[in-house]
Image (cartoon, rainbow, N blue to C red; front, side, top):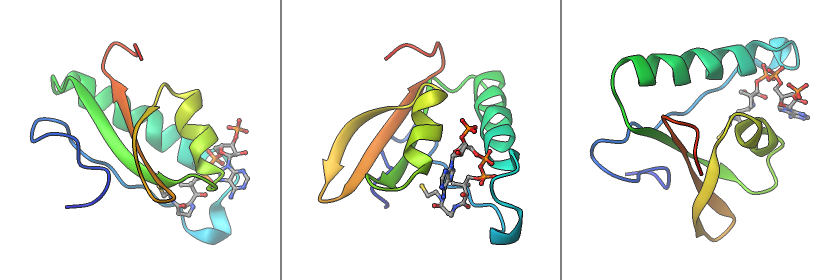
Length: 85
Ligand SMILES: CC(C)(COP(=O)(O)OP(=O)(O)OC[C@H]1O[C@@H](n2cnc3c(N)ncnc32)[C@H](O)[C@@H]1OP(=O)(O)O)[C@@H](O)C(=O)NCCC(=O)NCCS
């Protein structure tokens, strides 16, 4: 179980883009597609974990993820299907 685990019915996601292709908008598009797919599947929320200093945190927050727990330097973040925090 990773620090992104919230509940059995909340899928935990982890994404990465090949280093040589980062910064081209792929990560944001991938995340938008994953959010849309999870909603289409009927999931009430999705979660992830990220180190608080990782610039990816800003990407997640811009798409509606909010922190709900902390384990040392690692944040657990959740995004509800309706985008509410
Ligand atoms: C996080 C990651 C998936 C983002 O993918 P990407 O294709 O580089 O992201 P994008 O090009 O769509 O950028 C998304 C936003 O995040 C910001 N961002 C993401 N990683 C960043 C970094 N390392 N440095 C600075 N900004 C970063 C961008 O500025 C961008 O902001 P904008 O859309 O407002 O312009 C990719 O950087 C990655 O694989 N990182 C290593 C693995 C990792 O840390 N995964 C997340 C663990 S939770």
